[in-house]
Length: 96
Image (cartoon, rainbow, N blue to C red; front, side, top):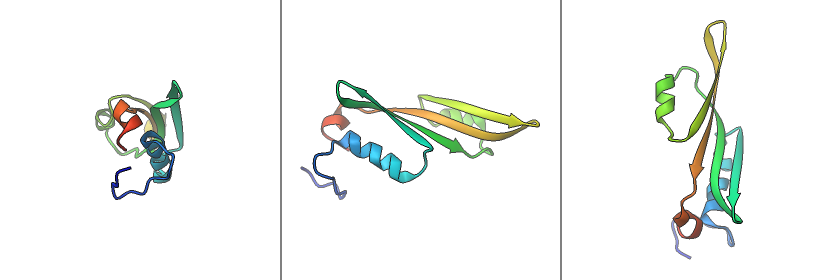
């Protein structure tokens, strides 16, 4: 096992480590793991965004995402984003 200056718990795949890193970042309200053939295929994260950010800028941040915008009295009060991160085949077997 190679040493990448990050301690890897024994028995964990790089894709499982990615899921744990997302959990530890505390950015997400929820995290969904999509599994195909017994391995992590994709990860979806739900996060709340700053309502002052421009919508066009939000759209440019990820290739695969859903934005939910809530408006009250003409003002945006809440923006939630669900983005999907595909786990590459290399990350499943080799890299983190």
